[in-house]
Length: 329
Ligand SMILES: [Mg+2]
Image (cartoon, rainbow, N blue to C red; front, side, top):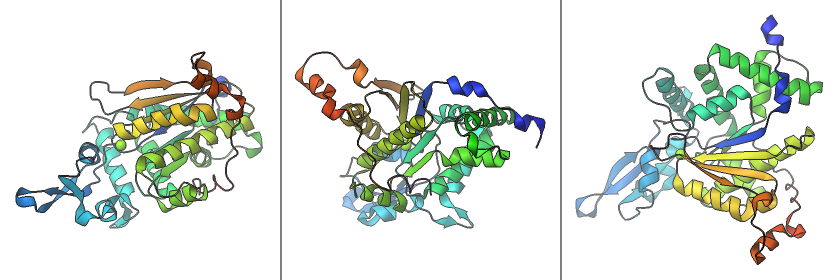
């Protein structure tokens, strides 16, 4: 271990409590993965029409002209499951290709690439919430590749100093480990929710949130993450205000999360500030930002607002038994 490996940034103890949730495709990375759709051709015949996730987010509501291959979504989304291509998991292959293209300067980064990089350097807790169907460990391995390939040596050292600072201050019993162990400790504290994965199905069905739309699954994943960061903050005795950012290039997903925050989460977590970033607009590279506050910013007066502030709605419901066990597995 070098002398530098012993250095820690203890100023992280005074840092604001900002946490982020990132959609993956076209938000962090433009992945080469294709969705196998069919398009209605002349005479009404269905013709193969594989599309990128960016194109899919535009055509997905046009059911008159587009459908999944053979009308089967599982078949259409086969590249979004944990299958091997050669000896490599398809997600890890596509992540490698997409990261390398940006790292080599061949293509500009997706809208939240830079914010994600910053979150990693700062050692902040985050969640990946994606409509993919990969195991949590696979997504986590993709994040590890991002760190290894994108962060400069200086950024990597800054990240490690921040992580050592967090560990020394908030989890002193854990003790110091190697750089690899420190990074592993960090990655274990984040959430990797691929909402079409078997692991997520198990997590959601245990909580009575069985098979539903992608938007509803993402809502559930967001709530799970908010509970996760609040629990960690409490365990560490932190009482400063918490803010949670959510970014997604798919406007339908971002809208669904925004309305979920307004209708549900700000009641369940009145002290948390939520920020939703719509990242599909090329004219606003870092995303259109919508802030949704909890209790403190509710307008005074009005029956609905009084109902929102009623103490009966304030207590947080306890997490259902076992809810947290899957995501870190
Ligand atoms: Mg996306």
